[in-house]
View 1: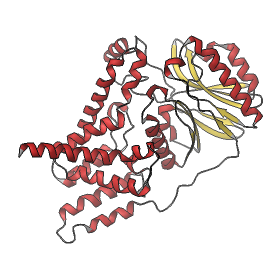
View 2: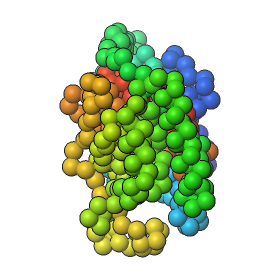
View 3: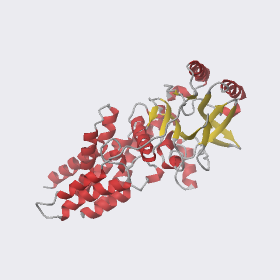
View 4: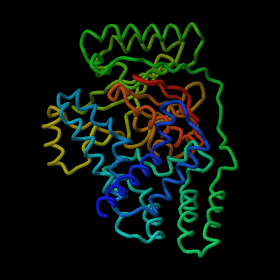
Length: 403
């Protein structure tokens, strides 16, 4: 009996995780289906409300692996590749505990409330698991009130007598999207450059000159094709660009005819920043990153723990510094908000009056994996929530315009 229950817990827990993660893998294999995403998303939430307590723990652990198995890949480039399976296992544990709060009770209505509250929680400031994200390409909307409607509709059958217990499921239709969001447009011609420079080669001295040549060739091509703006990926110049006046002068000269947006680093007052340089009409401005990647660009732990982790796993490097607020810049009368990689998947970038975002990323850290897919889905999520158009230039995967 115990063995059968153990097998059932593993089975139902893993099925829940598969349903909850299916929209990512359907997108990854170019099989996205609005109907399937709707059905699988609703079923996954229903499973969380009704499966056994131990099955919830299995589901949480499996979701942590299915969504974030790739995070440990980046440790290879810091000389601690042995940490990859440990980090992957750690994310399984984190999300087992995250969803594990549902296992504290068998009462369906309490689980529904807890699941809704979990949609506001970001473990260690890591926000890539948004519960509403499962509906990003479905008939159901991605706002909190729509998630609440679905959870209420799924919970009520447990408290209504047959034969009417399934009637509340009709409430799910109230969570459907009946209107498409509206977006502003602009008349600028924007060229988004996608590069494919491997992380192993990106920071090597011998790669620098070919990279610079590639960048200026793309600028010249974009000028010939009459583009207004050319956008390059995050840290496409793998240097502290403000320390190389020759390259800056060349970019300033080129910017007389075309606006150039490039990712690089900034060294200022003995502090390091991940930044975007915007060259326009022979002048340039710098947009510093506002939101850093937890455990990638900063350690979200007390100071003593940060030092130990940086010394042990990141060769003693200190955390990046951040801007105090988002950076907007104007090109030919159009205002853009700057976003660097992880920032483009954070609500802070979309606060205020934001119609257009220029985002740059370097996804070569995590090749091959589903990381670019989750990033794209999250950008789509925030673009729809905020009626924003995102222009995304990326290294290591395919960018594009996201609405």
